[in-house]
Length: 366
Image (cartoon, rainbow, N blue to C red; front, side, top):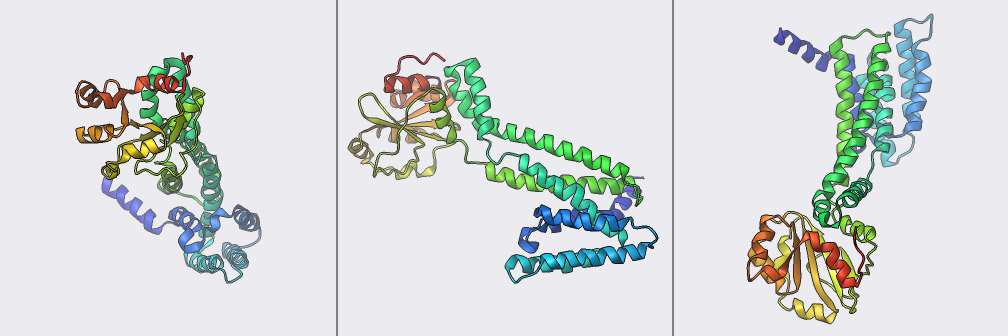
């Protein structure tokens, strides 16, 4: 029974016209080879408006309708490919390649169905998915600090990336379920060309694969750059004042936020997942450089401190770098009880009070 089912699936993947829902979608959205004609929604809607009425013209045989539809489609594609630009040349290749894939009226139906229920809905859904997860990070972080208080700022820093990812993925889920539901309804109402349930599954999975591929590209562009925003969020939330990088100051350590102390000296804050290997490049004269620019300390907010060795803490600590670590983390508990490191580490729960103290602000109850 299983072998018989697998053979049916194999035959559909390699032989059914409906397998092309996947391949037509890939061709229409292929930027490198075909200049993504499917992203031009005006062009896609033109194809639908011209061909859909021809598909149901009465008093014509299936072969006659196929010839009229194919000629009309090729004419539209050729008009869209005029010119000698790179994109025009790519669209001409698309026109030639699509002709080899469309051999009968059912192939025309699959092509139109792909545009209407896979390509255009995916275009629309992706526009609704955020390109920046900062909105969700701020929204959830506000709820955490409002409910639990400033002593839980470490949780906000540790969860910052996760909060944004979860928010964006929820939007993705809502969009894919909405469009998937519409696609199933469209398949159920499509009576012109009979299909098996496995062919319907080929169409449904083509939509899911293409949606996930495109959503994954957008997801990749969002990743990795948001953690630095958590310091800006904290300064906004607690109404702290910041200032620009001291003029002409350069360091091998990236600093995300600077603030002025009440005595006129500055402190820089760096928020990173780990302390990068280039910490070794910090000059032994770093202390003199900090003095020259009236920089009291550099504070590091580290979310993953497992690689924060004793050497890193002591070497940078001696050059006025301070590490804010999770209160109950093994690294903080060990270093805070060590005579040679305890002055260089502080609990994240104290961060807000420490900034307020340095700026001479008394009221930071929340």
